[in-house]
Length: 127
Image (cartoon, rainbow, N blue to C red; front, side):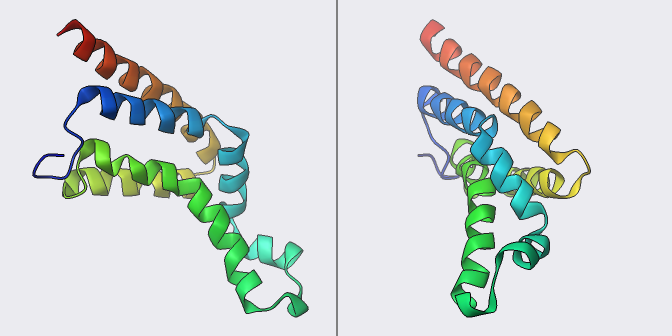
């Protein structure tokens, strides 16, 4: 890692981009995004009072973590201390969750990440 806490090797960063890109294209991501976009609706349909408070918070939180954790791993590709990278990833998460066709954005981001990761690895191999 460098001073901004970004991964130093392009092969490792490219591999991370590819892994996150694959995650963006999985049904798991789509399912988590669907539930995370409206946690109140999820609670209204799935939570029962006898389940307790932890079940009320646990299930929606698990979906939100499943939805965003892979994208947050990209902080290591661009730099954990890089405020521009942090803001950009935050805007991507917000757009996925808030825009009417956020699931389409997820697919487009996944494809772009696969291309970017492959390009990073290819550039490292050529050099």
